Structures are given as C-alpha cells and as structure tokens.
Length: 182
Length: 281
Ligand code: SF4
Image (cartoon, rainbow over the protein chains, first blue to last red):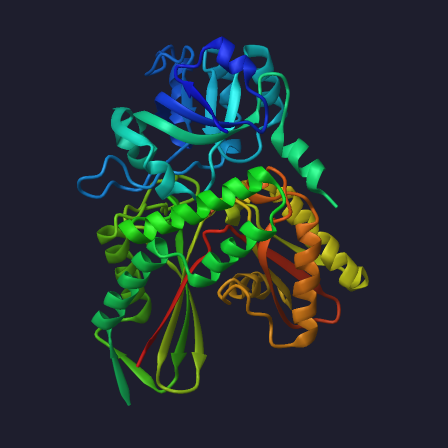
C-alpha cells in the first residue's frame, strides 16, 4: 500500500521514507527545469533572492504541454533530473527538502541530500496524462517568459511517486537492479 | 503523372502528429499487457499498470501521453513517378508539424540553435529523411521522438576484430548506462554497418518497425532475440527500479560497410514509442 504524505515535507515523514517506497503526495509543489534553475542560481550570485521560499518545499522537474481549454494543466510527467544536478546542492542548502523527477542523480547531489536531509522522488516518466489528473491547480508565479519552463505553483492530490534516493543513502536504482540482475 | 497536393500533405501530417501523441499504438499497448504478466518486480508491475492507465487516459481524452511530445522525425518514401504541386515536400511537412503541434496542444521543444537555445515556438523544423522509391505514391512514416531516450543514444566505430561479441557488449553497455534516464521499458534500435552517418540513420529507421515484428532475415532476427533476452537480464526493469522488463523490443538493421569498419549505433526509444504511417495516393 502506498504511503500518503502531505507537503511541505515534515522531518519525521521525510526521515521515515525508504528507497523503493510508493508514496502519494498531496499539497503544494513548485515546477522548475533547466532554464529556471539556471536563472535562479545566476540571479542568486548577483544578490537577487530566489523567487520562492524553498524551506521544506518540493520541486517538480516538469515542462508540461499547453493546457487544453477547460483543463488545469496539460500532460505533465517528469523530465530527466540529472540536468539539474549542477544547481541542486545550492537549493538543498537553501532548505529544499524534496525533488520529483526521473533518472540518476550525481554523487554530489546524493551526498548533499544526506547532509541536508532531503529525498528524491521518481514519478513514472511518460505517465504524463495520468499524473496530470492529480494536479488540481496550476499558476505561473515566476519567469513567465520561459514558457513551458516557467516556475509554476501546483496543488497536487495523491500524486503517485516512488522514493528513489532516501535521506539515509538508500538508492532504489542500485538496489532494485542488483536484485533482478541475472 | 500523379499529382499530390501540398495542402493534402500539410493536413495529413498535422493529423498524424496529433494521433501519434494521443493514441499509443496497439503494438506498444499489447507489449505493456504482456509485460504485466511476465514482470517479476512489484514496483515494476505498478509502473507498467500506470503506463497502461496513462495510455487509456490519453486516448480517451485526446491528450498527449507524454509531456515531451518530441522532435517530429519523418522518413518519407517518395515514388519517383509522382509530382508534388503547390510547394515543396519539406515545407509541407514543416507546415503540417506546425499546424498539428499547435492545434493539438502539443509541446514545442525545438530550439533555433543549440548554442543560444531559443525556442522556435512551433516545434519546427522537423527532421526529414527522404527515400526515393519506385511508383507514384508517397508514404510518410512519422515518429515523435522524446529527448530523454535520444540523449542516452550512442554510436561507435568498432574494429572488425571486435566481432559480434564486441557488438553485443557495446550495445549492452549503452543500455546499462542509460538505466532509468531513457524511461525504460525501452525499444532498442540498432544500426550495424553503413558508415558513420548511415549507421545512425539505420538505428533510427529500425525504430519505425512495429513492436513484435522481427527482421525478415532470420540471422538478424535471431540477433534481435538474443539481444532482447540479454538486455532483459540486466535487471534495470521498468523506470530503472529493478525488474526483468528492460526492453519491450529490440530492432536491428544491418547494411554493407567498408572492409576496415564495424560501425554500430544504438538509438534508444522510450516506451512512448510513437509512430504513424500514412500513404498518399
Ligand atoms: S524519454 Fe520518452 S517517456 Fe520519457 S519523458 Fe521523454 S518522451 Fe516521455
């Protein structure tokens, strides 16, 4: 049975998660992908604060399709997280507690996740129409000029994910593959 | 001489762009159903169930199955006896892509220049390969190719002495390296032979063959089967979280090459293996 977790992430919930757990997330997440990450970090260097308070928040790596009339959002599955690796440790330092994406993270990111107590969730890559059903509202809150790559605030309900990397160093990509290799 | 009108091409291309993104092919859908029976991992089964449900929703609501609605890639077989009137074939295809992606609420993922990265805003230009063939029909094969799997693809000029074992070893290493990033379960497209650019094209072309259809040459078909079982023993599984369904299918195309060469290309495709074919007569 999947665990149900409400966002923002509470430390007790977060520390109890283990790689391979099925989780249904509810609450608020923020979207950001390559261009938004790049801008956040570059602006920070110039002394401009992040456009959102990252404390205990979760970022979803997604660039949705345009919403059809009457729909909250278009199809919205995860993009490859590794492209954000360069920027992620800075965001974890600023209080980010969770990320939703797909694919490998770098060693630096995994170490930073242990250090700052954070978790990396995987949503099913390509299950974008299904995932969109658990998104109840969507609002662009920063970098509107980036189009599909703008930062959006999403309200989600029972959003289906798996824990890929937990805050204790567990990694389902390594453990799962080792188990089924023959 | 048969005339094929520019407008007709535009309309039909727009239609297949939408269709390919909304309606997962029967071939892939049946492969999901089969994988649900044979997958051993519980997580893997859950992933496949989500993919089946996702395909059902996309079809019922006519929305894209994946938010990455891809680069529009075409292989067009043009009969040498037909005449295209009203404009050029490539312009017609691009106009069709623009129309289909716009009307279909598909994502625009193409940029003008890889170095300055500004979006073209209409998902063009498409990538168009033209094959001149006998006859007077035009057959258009289209795929919406996702970026995640394309990024994990690779090409290598092996040495003839590497032989078939070297070829297999290389292919397995690419699938392994791709792991979860290419959105497994995968369709693995392989080109062997030709030269540098031809080999990559062969790998891409192999992905247009429907799942479950083996190569007509029994020797190549056997290689496909062997690779399929070896890939599925890697343990990567659905979404890379472990399991015995890493590839839904493996496709190989082989062509002649230089005595000094053994080019091999691996073009990975994710489970969102979206292909459509139409013939304009
Ligand atoms: S690799 Fe395929 S399934 Fe995964 S996000 Fe890209 S297009 Fe979608």
